[in-house]
Image 1 (cartoon, rainbow, N blue to C red):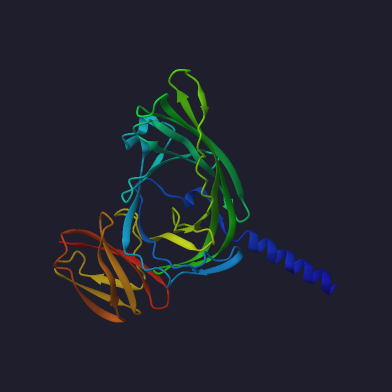
Image 2 (tube, helix red, strand yellow):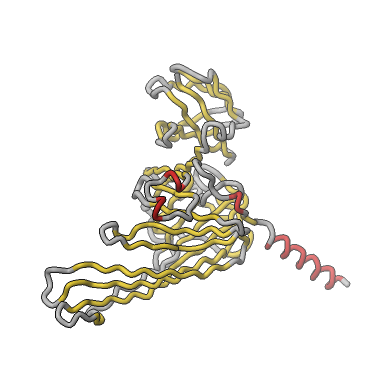
Length: 348
């Protein structure tokens, strides 16, 4: 009887564990939402991407030293200049750091399709479909997708050769390999799913003979594919990913982009429950009443950080904002106990 009870209890715990974290379509970004990201590429070898599996705790709270910030903005595709090329899209994300753009289609069945990203504007070669994610997304889910593109490049400097054709068949893999708690320098996320993604590429390079008018395989080997994985962390109710890690061949972190702050629009910013700012609007001085020691960053309406790592102490703090331009500002930070705080104020 004890064995039966033990087995039943173990089974119930396992079922509970497998169902604890689930992401639905409303957990993903909406038009006009903006997220401030920090990038760090200064990792030394041996900084691990963390364990996979159930109920993990990934503690990166003291690892990052990022000082490069960017803003990820979502808008309706119909407002984008390239909407005619992607009429199916209903969201477009734009990163000002590298000018990349991903057109996103969300259909009624909960499938997100990522496509777009011109490879070479001069060659007009496009990746029409990059990957799909199915909602709801839970631990243990796997997606295998593929796309192919062909790019022809004119050549006029080599005898008997007028163009080179590159065919790339990409098989994209997504494995929801873990869930658990994620600790970042500015916030702790209690329910996160981790997606492990990587690509396998089949590359074929051909040359076109000027006289025979035929294609033949090029006499040089195509490049080897980079199959090092990336790890994307999604948290319930937080919109787009909160952390993306790139791994090297030893599966250590080589680059990280993590959510530093959120700017969800003037009417959607969450007010902090343990911090009061007054007067609001303010002129040159604001007073901040804190229930606990904390550290905040302040951003303008465009997502640019204007004050960083400002330390506040329990009680009333005075902050000089005379040098800030008039406008709306957002603050985001953490308390000394790891709690997240965020809000906004107006400078007149």
